[in-house]
Length: 395
Image 1 (cartoon, rainbow, N blue to C red):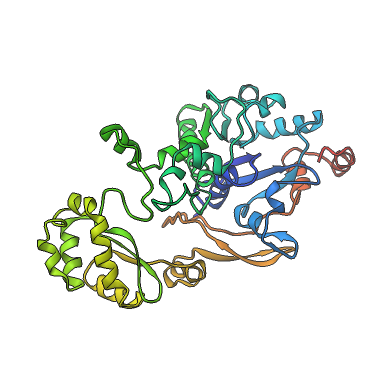
Image 2 (image 1 turned 90 degrees about the horizontal axis):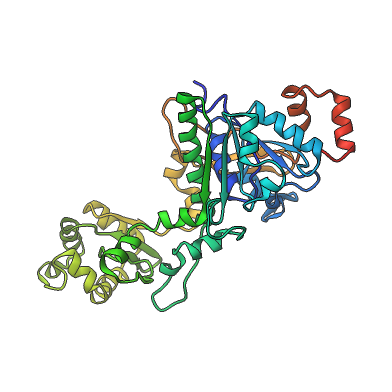
């Protein structure tokens, strides 16, 4: 069967990571994503390392399954071509600073007048409806202003950025959800709409229970390292040869855990009989568990706790993830053939559909690789007209 989004055309003005994450997801699911880049320059991330044969592996990993057309939107002819593409497209995506598209004369209201069914999705630091107009935003800004840096890191250490660019990635994923919802509305009503994603909002939305912990108790959540603020033991522990995590999420699992590590005396210890008590007295509990774990290897601990039905996992380094048998079974690491970089291994989509699966089918496009194809097949430009556009720097 065809991929679920086959027949959906997306004009992608996204750059770097936030919106390219969204359009990568749409492309993986079958949408025709036309990435619009600056002539001769392209997406900033084409210059981010690591590099293979002078090609950005970073760019390759985020822009698979897409087409690339170069187009100068500051030129009148470039604007006209873009508007002509809007007429025959379903979605426009961008992650410029607010007002950039207005300055170009390509705001949502302008595009809506051209195509009332267009879905216009944007990502920026603080949203288009904001008390911070024009304020720029990057992932680290979103993580900081959204509150997650304040609760990440060791208790006695500084606020710490999450290791992955989750401000960008969650923003992109929420944009995908918004676009899919808008497409559903369009199916029913024939109307398009605007999807306004603020990176700060995205981070705030994934703070889990930090907000309600504050609004209910009045206490400001603090950094707790890898420990959970309200479940114990739910943390990273040290073994002889590495690190592992356990998640004892209820009293039944606590009983299993104590029996598995041969410390049944803990079951009658008044400090640890319930989860609230274990959380309250966690500073006393963790050394007891660590004393047991440091005498065993990670593999030994996994065998003991898995057999006991206790949630446990090794702390994998990236090399181990790439070689993990379950990751291989689920085809989460795939190899693509790039025309210049050659073979590159990247992640595949985690969205596994039984009838219409999405997947990585081709590497990222070269800068402007599909310019002639799109102008000719979609808009009817002749070779001579395309040659003239190139000469004028429009494409």
